[in-house]
Length: 193
Length: 189
Image (cartoon, rainbow over all chains, first blue to last red):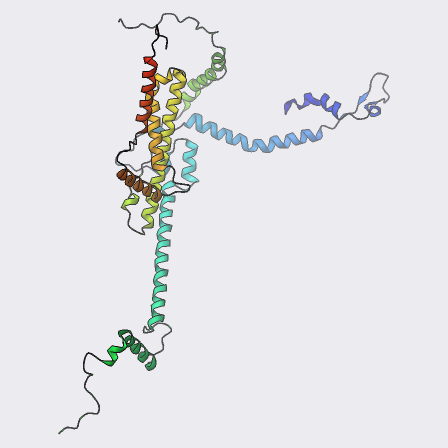
């Protein structure tokens, strides 16, 4: 960008103003002409702004990186002592990487445990939902449990129907020829003599 | 024979003999070394350690109970870790062979790099047997099933020799024997 000023003659050949405007004779003697040039304001302004905003980020970054690499230095690989459990950032070599691991990024082991926990939660949730579905299904099928829909009304006809269904599943021959005698009558009560 | 002595004077080696190395040395290595000796080593803080991460032993997929999703996840993660390690191993062995060839030269490498070549061949074959040709994506269960099918196949075909590198060595030996058997007047081979 510094060398752009050297390219001004080239700029003049490409964007040459008209021949009449090039030399304005203005109370000067012959031979001395005023050169009509293209404004340098825009390019100077653009490069100023570019440098300003670009270096605002670069200069501090470069200083930080220089300090971390030159004065702090990278870590040395050592064996883990027997009674010591290293913190999660002590598994990284570069000081900036350690900084990110310590203050910015989620630890590696924590991420693993969170995944395990979410799997566990999902499995539990699925099992409970399946249990609820089974319970509802059985309650609807049997109709004998005291749920929130329960009304304490004895449905003789339904009970009779269920008994008949059980008997029918044994077969019609069982009804025709039962295995035992029916139980003795309990009513009417025989008179005391 | 008496022990070989190093040469007293290496002909052709002087400060003008390699312009490229000298240029790089002057422009890059010497300033960096100077800076490192005079500033970095003086002002650098004390050394501090970093450790190599150790992963605990978890159950593999064949030891997991049915419908134990957590066990499956842990087995899968350890499978992926081992796959990455094995990939790095194969990559390192490949690297060694390349360096051996670059050092010895294309022709001498046929004789001198046989060990590296065998190691790479064997490790590559084992990698492929363990992790390859299962389709993408694949899980630890697919690898387990592949192992099972391989063992069944081995049981059904006991006569097949699965050591491919032995076949390659055999072929090389036959080639060399053939070349040796050609009668030539002097040792021009």
